[in-house]
Length: 93
Image (cartoon, rainbow, N blue to C red; front, side, top):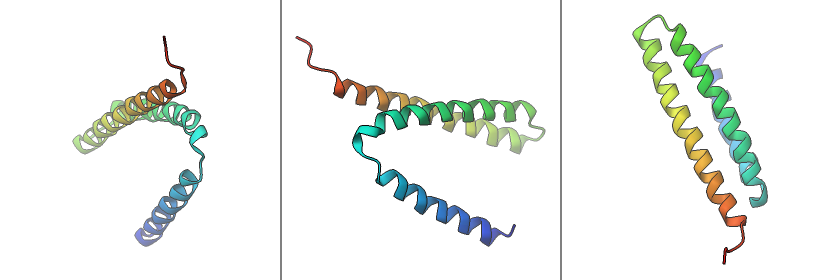
């Protein structure tokens, strides 16, 4: 595939992703975040496997970067989900 084709697919994916996410009602965001956290857990495991099989310093550096970013994304997702679930709980007396 040429670089222009890959860039075109990437840009189209951004637009489609934005349109899909912007149409989700607020009551569905918490279940979707939970599903996204599960996906990020799989991505984190994949990044760890890639780091284990890396042969060059560049591969190792990219894998460690992927591990760090996936961890931040996963933990942040759990924090946001927890805050959203707190909003649905009643006031404690």
